[in-house]
Length: 542
Image 1 (tube, rainbow, N blue to C red):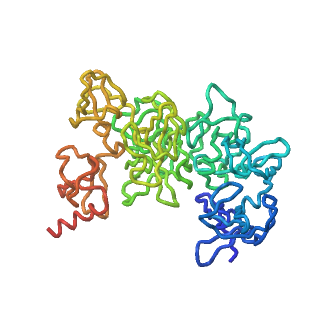
Image 2 (image 1 turned 60 degrees about the vertical axis):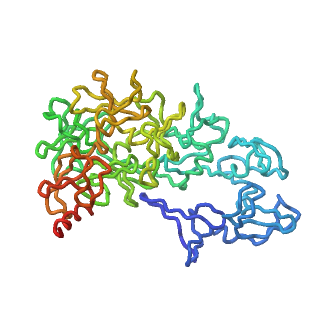
Image 3 (image 1 turned 180 degrees about the vertical axis):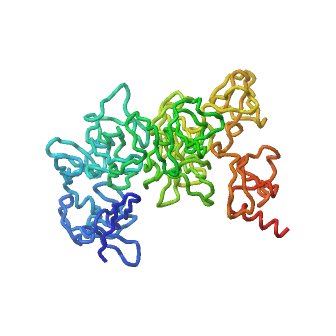
């Protein structure tokens, strides 16, 4: 059956893989009506027997994939691709190498490559790797010597970590000016040698090794035309009045003076932090929104997720209640705005989504880089970067000292207040301690001296971050709401006393120090549908 497989839209990139050459399909292809078997039109129409210049003495016969064979030209296994075989010499070459004796001049180089038919020891002038076993290719004009595999690299490539197409540059030194140190790959964060090839985006100065970019490829679709739509602001302009999607019943008015905030407990509806100037407000509804939160783009991409994300004030959770979001990057539950995926269940709060790919954190002395393929533990808390999800946000790494920082610690407030300390507490990594005893003065438990903590210099007060700000510091505690799963109003509340008391609905302990309080039932229960509904059932049957 002949089908049009590839579909391009703003929400999803759907790509299937050819069972003949193991390459992505972006054009009409053949598909089996009974299983997930695809073939490029060109792969389906290959000759069953060929004469090839690399092996001119015998006829080569086409074979189905085999785990015991590898390609003579690129030295890759033939377990996922069709290949040609010589019965007399046990010679094998996959169909990609067989059909790319001379590479297409559109694939990154302006001249044609021709093969060197004898095995030689050489250093590939595109990737920089040495090789003794592969067939080399040489540019007949500029004598560029390279692996066959490297000469077939596509001219442009799309990865999740950058919203533009990356372009293959055969000599990075031509486009990147070398400073006191070499640039790093924005995917593996290892140094890049500018005398070799790489993938580069001039618009956002994104650079990656050949193999790193290919490993993270999601096709060749450029979505840079997708506008990051938000409120229509000019550069540096503050609109005096605007209508926002989250509060469209009234216009919001700009306030530039901090004095106009009459109460310290006023929170921004976007980031759930204390309101500060400049901000927008609606006096009729007691609604506040930071200017920077009002400027957030309506659509954007995140380096760890392949689909387009949309700004929303009612994030997707399993029990969609009162505008809560469960962030895949930091694993926090919070109120406020978040970016949602309409294709899958991915969501990320605006704090995590706003951290730039390269940034400096005040608690660490070196620049940090967003690593989307790490799988490492955060050095600030020893938490792995995949707590609950396969598609998390990644981590931030330091190439100078191998320091790793997770999203949860990266978004901790630099200053925090504790009710029994009159001074602001500062997020800290090292504090002088002559006694060599390390304790949290809130929970009175021992703390790891290598982990970040909050510290008051005047009082010599130290505490765990979670003891100061809580496990989910961006919940609007005290807010009451009605829900169909419970007969009475429920209030978001911290567990302050009798912290070991289990949930009154399910009997299990609390993993975090907050839950839902029902004053009429005199109960404290988990924030989930089962406990909200289960408590009513327990009361009826008891």
